[in-house]
Amino acid sequence: DGSAGDAEQNIKDTANIVKIAHSFGATVEGEIGHVGEASTCDNAVSDKYTTPQEAIDFIEKTGVDALAIAIGTAHGAYKEKPCLDLERLKQIRAKVDTPLVLHGGSGLSDDDFRNTIKYGIAKVNIFTDLCLAGVDGVKEGLEKDSGYLEMRNMKVEKIKEAVMGELKNAFRPEFLNRVDDIIVFRKLQKDDIAEIAKRMLSNLKKRVATLEINIEFDDEAVSKIADAGFDPVYGARPL
Image (cartoon, rainbow, N blue to C red; front, top):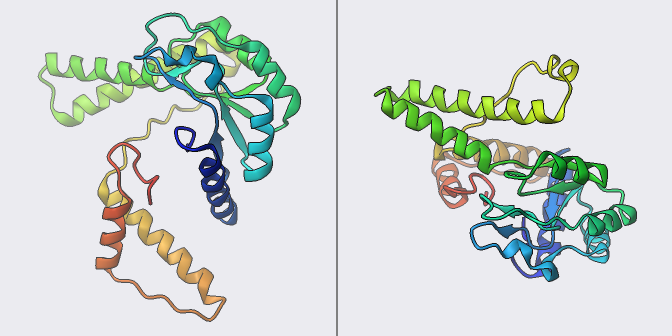
């Protein structure tokens, strides 16, 4: 997500990520326009919304597999009901075939979800609602004087309940009966980043070997890369 910076730099950076990801068989979701912060209500500034032409240009120049657009949603908990620009969404959908993504799904109404999906959204991101559910689990654990592992499990169960609640609002029972499990991913730690760095270096070693180039790396190198590539908020993204 380079949407907060310069538009041309966002295109350049995203195109580079797409090239790398596709070489590993992975897909990439990019973002353009400004998905605001609910705490400041800047999601209502319509001149920061994604335009159809911006979507066309971004997809053509980057080759992203999915595109998050700005039509009035925001990250965080809304202070007032968001006003979604569904007409803009329909215009973008009419111009591009790439799956469209809606960020800032927490706090939207069932009608908002139905309408955005009806007019072209293929994926919805919901985060804040699940964070709040997790906080409720931690509070409950503190009230019961639970240990860390028990409290963590309570947090995960609260998040699963919130996910199932959202699913029940959107899907019929016959679909829900086919859901085997809900997976809650924990936050990556530095040890995880080091393991990811090691695997990436191993893959790189194999790739350059075809060019008769040999790369050797030790634990100190892996540790240095992991330290530089770790961010407490964004996990492995800087890696």
